[in-house]
Image 1: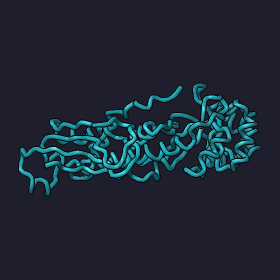
Image 2: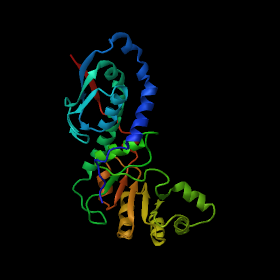
Image 3: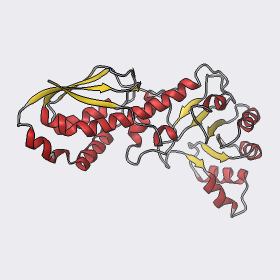
Image 4: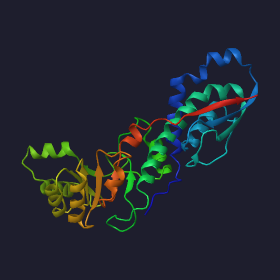
Length: 297
């Protein structure tokens, strides 16, 4: 079942992250605004797109201004997840000028960062559009995120990934079993095979958990499949090897490609028939989208 891309980030996490950012920026002790803007002065501002992309983070930006002054009116002109163009008016903000000016940078930081994540995700999703080679026959490989997120912002960045058309991997280490290279290295010290590692994980976690293991060769993938792995992560494999593994698996396990995924390589990877393509870069390296807040006099 596809994820609900419109599902907003947890409001409690948004509030906590916003408060931390306002504290970091000294927004409630803005000496410049206090010095030059009289108490009670009101005005209007607009957030404008300076480049094209996918907008993400409106609930977070709104929470910034609400935290400083609940009477500030924050009125989006387009919904989150919209494809935007340079010059587009995205939001109108009206009310006391002091909180608008003091919250400007924090609100834009969130909007620019999250819109960058959504845009990077959208670009990859568009790059694989039109394929129908997944092992379950349901369309192109799904672009998913990883845990390579900005510390403290994972909930928000995962939301941005969904707005960009991607899907989420496990939220944290308690969400699922993913046996990575260093887990395997530790087990190899005890002379365990790939099959034995999968079996060990299966014995030691609840039956409700899916067991996924990272492999680097076709032989390891076959061994993991024979041991009953639910998902097999193909780490930095060549496209040819990925294609062979997908054929070997034949839909009996989920296949996930990871490593070396770029806008230039993602379609070729998707054409191998893998079910998932995980991309750390959509969160840890996405360039911020250029947006600005402009007062209207």
